Length: 76
Ligand SMILES: [Zn+2]
Image 1 (tube, rainbow, N blue to C red):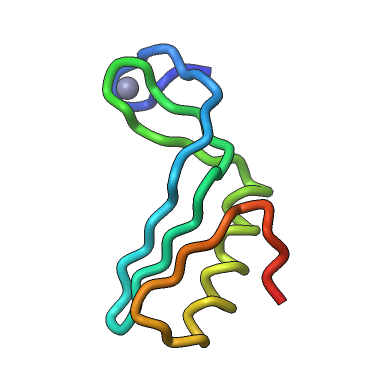
Image 2: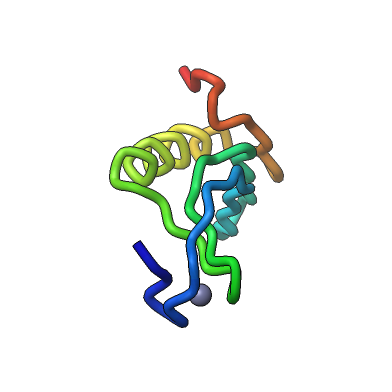
């Protein structure tokens, strides 16, 4: 698999995923991703995307100004 933007090589990496919402900023750390060596574009697989969506949905209900969690943490 190569980068859709620049066709560069993708490497496995843990990245920080950040969502900037109206009332809150959510940062999820250590998310497994494929990152382009050339342009830095990040790709998440379907499972990861789904889990990130669920985490963001739960976390945004907390309505904290900034929420920082680890990807591996279970979010109740
Ligand atoms: Zn690229």
